[in-house]
Length: 188
Image (cartoon, rainbow, N blue to C red; front, side, top):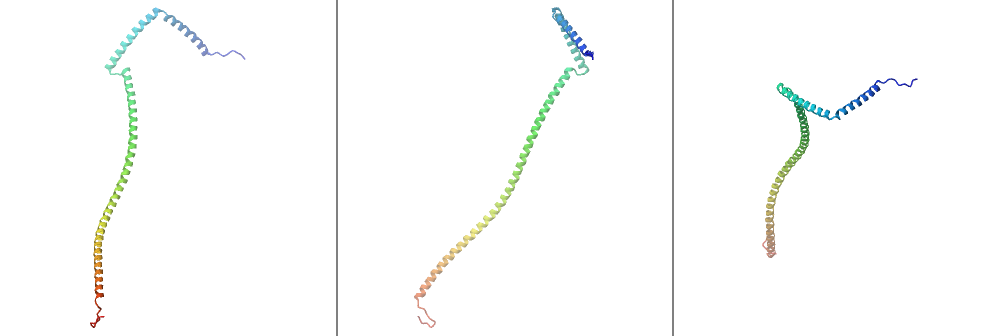
């Protein structure tokens, strides 16, 4: 068996890319370490940024004339869409809260209605009881007046009885004082 490993192209590519990266980094370091290169790159960057700004302005002007949306327009629309979605979510949460409170209040209203039905039922019963009580009170007043009449009559009868007792006693006293007569006119 051979101890030699098979050829791996990836390993070779990795070695060459590391060497190439090191050389490019050294080259960039040498360029960027140079003051003249930095000044020149600054001038180039400034002119490039001005050129890009002009292109942006021209694109926006052309897009406005052609009525085509720009990146800024799309960004604004996206921002407005996100804000709208957040507001809709907030409104949904508020609606759910309102639905919950309406449901709880409807349950409370149902319980109040049930209690009101019971109160109405009790009121009707009390009204019926009141009518019965008034009738019984009228009957009681009638009975009371009849009892007053009976009492008055009994009082009269008691007085009459006493008068009769007095008369009886007078008659008895008179009988005892008078001699008893027999049928022939003789006295005993």
